[in-house]
Image 1 (cartoon, rainbow, N blue to C red):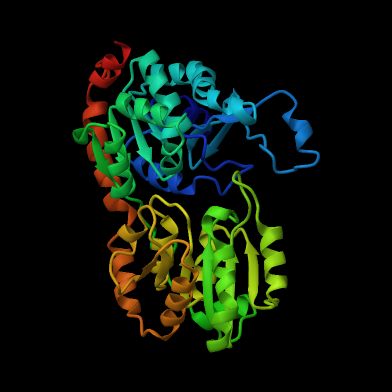
Image 2: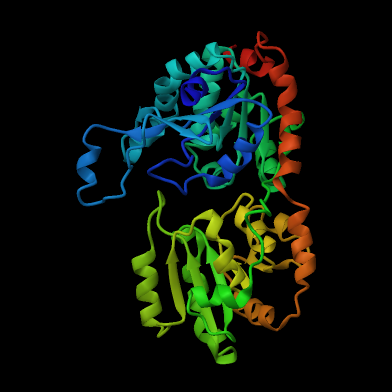
Length: 418
């Protein structure tokens, strides 16, 4: 009865994102759920997470088992409805139609949710999710917010997608960015400054906290005196685990007890694990690089606590939650000068920022990181100061005027029709 009641109860807003955890993709979009399920404690909501589909895609799974796994039409997660409507999405050049298709295939569902009280569509990622959400907002007379999370940077360099990004952002009632670098991109694309706001990600320090190092190292069969690097993220080119592996032979000359933990697996962007394993073998690093696969959020404190330094040689980021998660376990962070990374690792006592693509600088910085007497208490204090509660309070304040009058169509949506 409780589940049936939750499935029909009144809601205030619809969270709209194709990237959201599900039974078949439990690790997808955890940062969105962390943020919005905390909002749900104050404002009842439902999630619409459209999933790509085309006739015959099940046949592809015969040789690519993880290809577009079929999520259930409706899930209950922590008492919240998460819908997974299918939208027609063909691979290749026809992917440019995803925004239209996502909106069309979600229309009747979002219309029904509006009848249950929804007064706002909250989209995550500007394309194709934000494009679809702003179309739904126009069709249904609902305000729309879009949160920029990092994919907008490469999309903005695409001459086909750039005008579509700009149009979606102009049509949004409010544009949130997880970093100031993304807010500046929104302004560059023509979004009025008064409709933009930076609301970063946060960290759950009840989940991410240090545990006893020796016990953590025993879990992963690491020597007690090891010097341990760790990276957490998808095994894809963008995250740059291969760039870190390239540094290891030089680092081993000075740090003979060096080990490198890699937490993560493949995803929609691909799976580099075979290439990474071949790289490890080619460089003679067997026994020094450890692939731990996917680790559940509640367990991630163990490999983090077993480590000395967190590193992510990433090509592009918005605001990487994992930096704060590593800091909440007492680790300094070494990362690249891209996206919002320098906004998270904003002081020298928290870690170091290196130029992207500079292997010599990355190697030297990692070498220095092992020698530096880090103030772990200062790192932990910074994580404590960046908990989710502060972010959620800011978000609820921004939502309030849009949720105050259920019958008012926002000015940006009306202007977009003209």
